[in-house]
Length: 326
Image (cartoon, rainbow, N blue to C red; front, top):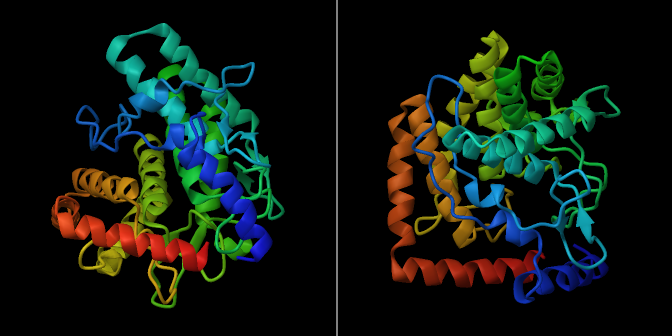
């Protein structure tokens, strides 16, 4: 990251972390949990509750769509991942309460996703982020993500199940096509030299295989398969499950989980929030697949979390990484 980008990053991130105003972190940093009311083999409530996100304090646009305040020059932006998670949280709340206002919020999100599915240069339909984002390589607007594709699909197939409105299924089919194309061809799929299949949250070269985004994207593929019985979706979910099983050991730092596999000299540890999220996500994957490796790593990483020395070592390590790479 250049000096100018680094300064812009710090100008934005310090007020978000240290200021009293709501920021994008107000939305993201809920309590990562497994939704015990979700089912493994039929479409129902989403796999995490997202109820805190359903009650997001704002800001919103005039149509009730959440905006995230990134502070600094970015300001308020639509983030399609946040939009989808807000919708999924309201769907869960509707399923539990029968509150029609929650249903309307959920369907409003589904409608937004239909309207905002955009055609990229490769002719694929994606949900774009229309702002630059400071990663180690700055993501230039418009940029798309396997995470947004997966969670958008998870909203749309539930909207279709609830209403039988074909608009939602048509949009989900368009969105799924991005999972069938590699990143170099405008999609979100990466096939590595071993033949492992990855779903990339941030599309950069070389790929970084961000763990939480990969897993959430997998759930979108799974939901699409549950709804359509599409064999391509079944095969993709099975292949990505196999990829994660083979590579999960690489995300284990021996005292904490890694956020990504970027190949940097100093590895990028997960923050305490993302470490908890990994544990919940692996618990869900165990529920969906029955694969014991996911339960084993969820338990192992949970034990790391409650170890005083591990927590403090992770904090020091993460701070050093940020200073070197951000």
